[in-house]
Image (cartoon, rainbow, N blue to C red; front, side, top):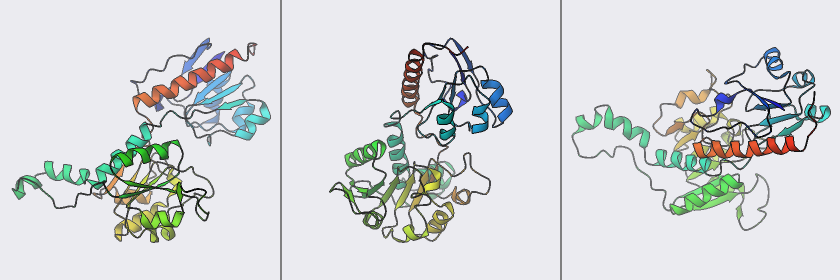
Length: 318
């Protein structure tokens, strides 16, 4: 079968991404513009399309009669019309479980960087401030230990649980939040408002749904009585950016760290850009998932899925 990879540039150049077994013809593009005509032209002879973020609409799918499989290089499937795939008999697969170390370690990196003032002190150590001061150490901004702090985790899936394990190794007390407005399902969970009220750090790992859209907003921020650090490695839309900015400016939260944003890359009018230089703010460009080990694990899972699909469809479409 012929396979086309539309946006291989979403992977590191250093990652080893061998051609899946069973693929007889393979075309790789670093990027593909979001243009129906170009997408159709590149995919018209392919039985398999591999993509990360290219949006595949019903109109595109209808113009690709040879297409049998769309293989996503991610867990999220929002960029493909799932109903159209079902209607047209096209299999849609994603990849899960590849970043259960990468994302949690990135989360702890962000937590430590902000709690220990890494951004602030790196600048002061190199911009002449330290030399001008003359003391052997600077302690202008407080350094916070993780030990003894309470971490509230919203989204207790595999990644959220792994963050909890790492946090406990630092001596943190970990709370897993129940869904907003729900009674805790077991003793492992704590009701949502108690988590907001009790946490020194709140880490977001939940999916973006109608229920979690702008879950962190003016109302929920007002319930965070310990002025926590908020970390978002879930989806950009889980927080209201303007409300985060207001909370930080008004000293209602310690800081904000995020790997995800409502528009990626940043929209020019994203309110979060207004706090980018704040010493307790840290942004990364949606790469928490992407350690080399995680990328190669993802590709291993993906390649096996494609090979299994080919093996189960021995009759190739002419």
